[in-house]
Image 1 (spheres, rainbow, N blue to C red):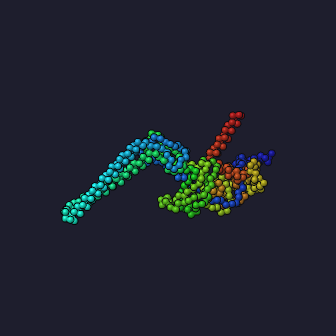
Image 2 (cartoon, helix red, strand yellow):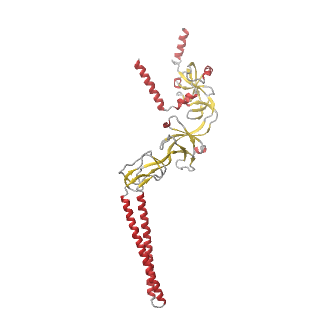
Image 3 (cartoon, helix red, strand yellow):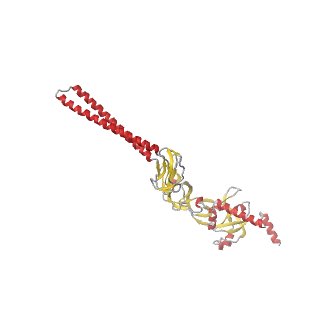
Length: 414
C-alpha cells in the first residue's frame, strides 16, 4: 500500500495523469519526389457558341446535356428580315446584270461603227476627226462596261452576304460534343455578343497547369501524374503529362502544360479545379515517418518527433502486424528528438536524426508538450495511419458530430 501511494505521488509530481499516445515504428526507404500543382479542367474542343447576327430567338432545339454533332442546328433566329434582304440583293444583282449587258451591247455597237468609219477613212470618204471621235466614244463605252462589271461583282457579293446572314439565322454546333449551360430563352434578342451555350466533348478532358521556369529542369512530358479532388472522394486518377509549351511568359516566368485523358465515367467536369501531383523521381534513402508525427516544440520552436523508449520496442515487437486492437502498454519514457526533413510527401516524410525502427508518436504529441517524460503507448500500423491522414476535413467533422450525438444520447438515457 505504501509503495502504491508513493508511485501515485511520483506520478502526480510528474504532471498528474499519464497520457496515452499512439506510436508507429519508423522504416528506412525513399520517397517519390512530387510537385503539387492546381489544374483547371476543360472538355476537348470546348467552345462557346455565339450567334453571328442580331435577331430575336424563335426556337431552341437543344438543352444542357444533349449530345450534338458538328453542324447540328441548336437555335433558330427570326429570318423575316434576312429573307427580305436576300430578295433585295437578288433584285440588285439582276439590275447589275442588265446594266452589264447594256454596256456590252453599247461597246459592240460603237466598235462596229468605228470599224466602218475607219474603212471609209482609208478611201478618204470619212475625215480623221470623225474617226478620232468614234475611238473616244468606244473607249468611254468600254470604261462604262468595266464599271457595270464592277457593280455586278459588288451586287453578287452583297447577295452572298445576305444569303450568309439568312443561313446564320440557324445557329449550329461548331464541334461534336455535349451541350453545356444554356444561357438563352425564346423571345430573347440575340446579338454577336450573346453567349448561348458551351459545347465540348466531355469524353476526353484537358487539364491545364502552370509550370515555373525552375520546374522545367525536372518536369518532362510522359511523367506520371496523380489527379485528386474532394469531388472524387478518395479516388485518385493516374495518367501521364501530355505536353509542355516551349514558350515562357516573360512577365510570369511560367509556361503551360497539358494533361489529356479519357473521362468515360464523367468523374471530371469542365471548369473544376483539381490537384495535380507530378511524380518526377525518388528521394535519397532516409528514415520514413508519417507527417502526423512531426511536431513543432512550442518552447523553442524546434521541429521533431517524440520517440518512445527503445525498451518498449521489445515489448511491442510481436504486435507490429496486429495494430488493430493492440493493448495499451506502459508507462514508458518519452523523448523529443529534433529531426531534419530530407524529403516530404503528402503523407510521409523522410528525415534524419532518428533511427529506423524507433517508435514515434503519431497521435497525442500535445499531451507530451508540457514536459511529460512518460506515456502509455498503443501501437498502430502504417495502413491505418495513412488511412487516417487521407480523411478529409468533412469526414473528420462528421466523425466528431457522430461521437457528440452518441455522447448526448447516452447522457439522456442516464
